[in-house]
Amino acid sequence: MITLVIGGQYGGEGKGKVSAFLAKQESFDIVCRTGGVNSKHTAIENGKAFDLRQIPTAATTGFKGKIVYGAGSLVHIPTLLEEMKLTEVSESQILIDHKTGILTEENIQAQRADSRYAILGSTMTGTGYATAQRALRKLPLAREFPELESMRGDVPVFLHDALIAHKNVMIEGHQSSGLSNYHGDYPYSSNRDSTAAALLSELGIGPRYQMRIVLVIKAFPTRNHNGRLPNEMNIEEADRLNITEYGGGSWGIENNRRRVAHIDYEDIRRAVRLNTPTELALTGIDYLDRAAKKATSYDQLSEEAKDFIKKIEDEVRIPITLISTGPETEAMIEKRYEDKE
Image 1 (cartoon, rainbow, N blue to C red):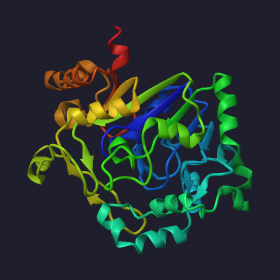
Image 2 (tube, rainbow, N blue to C red):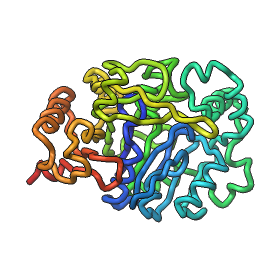
Image 3 (cartoon, helix red, strand yellow):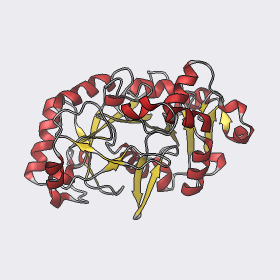
């Protein structure tokens, strides 16, 4: 069984928090992290915030299974090693495909020297430049780095065997539908496709396995940099709603205050078409319903919040099964169980 977590708007939806929560609730044998190191995923566990670019947020919950990077991913070795130490992940837990691309300091500096990346809103981690080098067949691969020897393997074979043996696999996706290089707001986009099919492709997983696809959306979508953001509100309204979030920075580059918008149903419908989710996870409901902060039961929500949730479900015809009520991992309502009572 595969559980795939993917963003449905313009990043910052809370994929890391949702993934960490699911890791605590489900018995996953394997967790996969796709993409590069350009987007941080955050989890707050026992009052400690983890901002992770490489290691999946499941590692913050004490996960002791296998952590996998497919050939379509990018690994920055210093970040990987640093985050392994931070989350107490051992080398024996890591599996990196022999053909995984390795992001180097040269990639980082080359991207930062190109002024166009800053205009487009890049995080300047070298991920875009490394992806371009991969297309030109110039990027070094994991098989060329002796320090990764104990962590290398054939990821498609490993995952196929695991799934045939009925192992439970979670994929923590990168970026979001609105930032897909193919289907998103190009050129104000990521360097690669970031839809559900692309995540499977990065790992070498075919489309016929049993799959749960969780599309994460935000009650008030945000965006770190330039580009499309329907129904964008001004900073005064964001302040009134107490929505002050920051993101988009990287090593030596400060985060920007995120732009904020009201939800756009056509954007979500498009994300549903692109990703065919089985369910939605909604984050940021605590901005709409202040009293719902850290709520864990649907009955604790206001009627306004419940009406908002029903409106989304009616508009896109997909059930909302998870409702985040704050940044902490445990601040979550599992609506799929409450609906059955």
